[in-house]
Length: 128
Image (cartoon, rainbow, N blue to C red; front, top):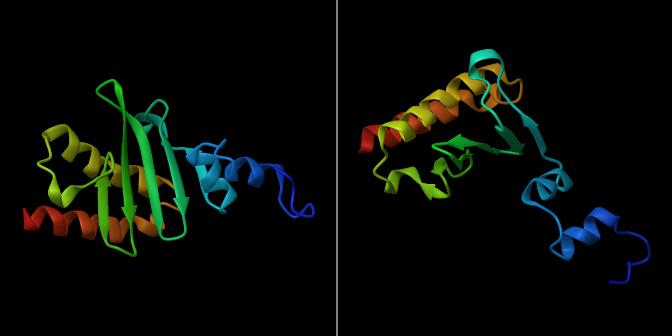
């Protein structure tokens, strides 16, 4: 791919060619990705990615990768890519959604989402 008058960085060229991970794309767009948790709340291989008005928390659950995505603008929460209002959540999934509260409280940027995330979660549980 020929560079367009040196305006594109190598990272942007790689993204256009499909050679970057989703986390790399978040970084390119100005998002922040980092390991999260402290002490007892720290989960191995857990990451929090925050971009504008949404966040994604990835973690290991039952020996597989799971994710919780919150989109403030849409007022929706997704678990492993599925809107939770359409899921029959098991005990472990509900526990993971509720436990995210502690990680958001500990995280400087996460605190900005805490009240809205909990209100959305409560609303969805009340509707079930």
